[in-house]
Amino acid sequence: MKGILGSSSPPMVLLFMAFAVLVMLPEASAKRWLVGDNMGWTSNVNYSSWTKGKHFYNGDWLFFVYDRKQMNILEVNKKDYETCNSDYLLHNWTTGAGRDDVPLSVTRNYYFISGNGFCSRGMKLAINVENLPPPPKGDNSEIVDALALTPAIAEAPTPAPPPVEIGVLTLSP
View 1 (tube, rainbow, N blue to C red):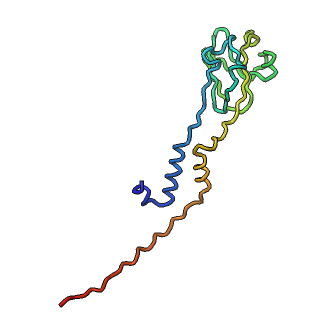
View 2: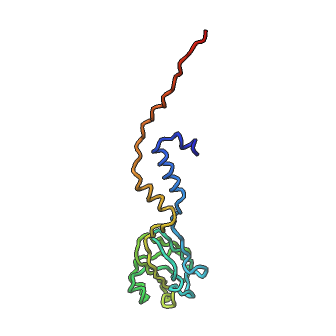
View 3: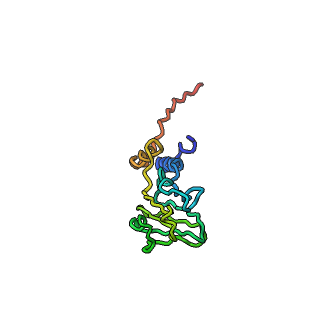
């Protein structure tokens, strides 16, 4: 490694270290949640229990799998969620395929119901979408913090070579 970095300038070394730290950071990626897990979007699932212990983050997706001939995915406000009213939709996410993705692209509360009487039989889902929390200390964040606080390194002047002693030349007869 000395051969690679030993002859490099200080800014290049700093750039290499920053790149190495970024490669080691854990990747934050969106999650695609299968609503109701293997049961899907149906009247046989307690969705309040399903959401317990789960954290939904901005950028995640909800994946609804359901009987496309009977059920649908309707986004409503909190009041309509509580009363199972589908008269004032915020959005109808139903495409008719029975497999629909809903992007969670805003940090807020989301409320979903299924119409046709299914909401009153339990087909309703309320979730809170949060911003992704910062990475916990103890991972590579200390290194990133240290690199962020490190002042830019100025190019150091090349030191003069050490003096070379020249001996006295003696000639023998």
